[in-house]
Image (cartoon, one colour):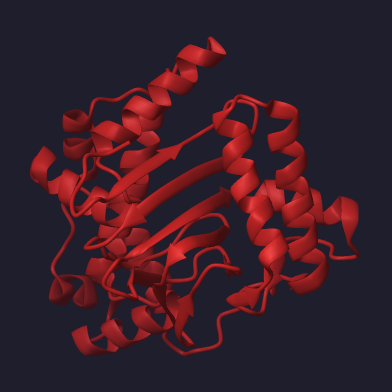
Length: 286
C-alpha cells in the first residue's frame, strides 16, 4: 500500500487466480483522478465517504450501498465529495472476462454495456468487497465465485449489448487518424498545429473532432495513452525509469506524477505488486 497523505492509502494489484482482473482498494482524501478512460470495465463500491465522479452525461455522487459501472473507453474523472474523502473497493475486469460471464448467464451476445452509471445495490456492492477480501486472504474459490456472481448480477439487471462504434460526425475519420498518428509518435508527438496541417484541417476543428470522438482533447488523451503503455511495460518487468523514457515522459518524476494521478498508486508500488504476484504464482514477468 502507498504511503499516507491525510490518511490516504491504496493497493492496486492482480490476484494470479483471477486472470483478466485488476483490483484497487483505497482511501483517498486529496487525490483526484483527472479525465481518463480504461480499456476494460470499472465496477466500484464505495465503503465510506463520498466519491464524486464526472461522466460525459453529468456528475454522480457514489455513497456506500451504490455500485458505479463504467463502460470501456468512457472518459471520466473523480474526486472526494466530502472533506473526509472516500474509501472504496473497485474491480477492473477485462472486456473478455465480462463478455464470457455475460454469455454464460444472460441473453446478451457480444460485449455487454451498462446504460446506468450508478445504481443502488447494496448486495452487489457487498459482493465486490467480498472479492477483495477473498483475494487478499488467498481464497481462490471464493474470490472467483463472488466475482462471477457480482458481474452476472450487474449484467442481468443493468446490461445490454455494447453498440458498435460507427463514425457519424464528419470529423470522426480525422480524429481516428490523429489518434493513430499520436500512437505512432508517442515519444515525439507533433504540435496541434503540425498535426492539423498533416491531416488537412485546422487546429480548432481537430480539437473539436477529437474531443467529440474520444471525450478528451489530444494532449489529455496522449497522457492517458502513455500511462497505459507504461503499465504494460511495468507488467512485463520494466523499471519505472525505463518505462518513462519508452513512452515519452521526460523523466521518472514526470511518469510518477501522471501515473499516480491516473492509476491511483505510484509506478514503483504498482510494479512491486506485480512482482509479488509473479513470485507467488511462480511465473516470470518477462
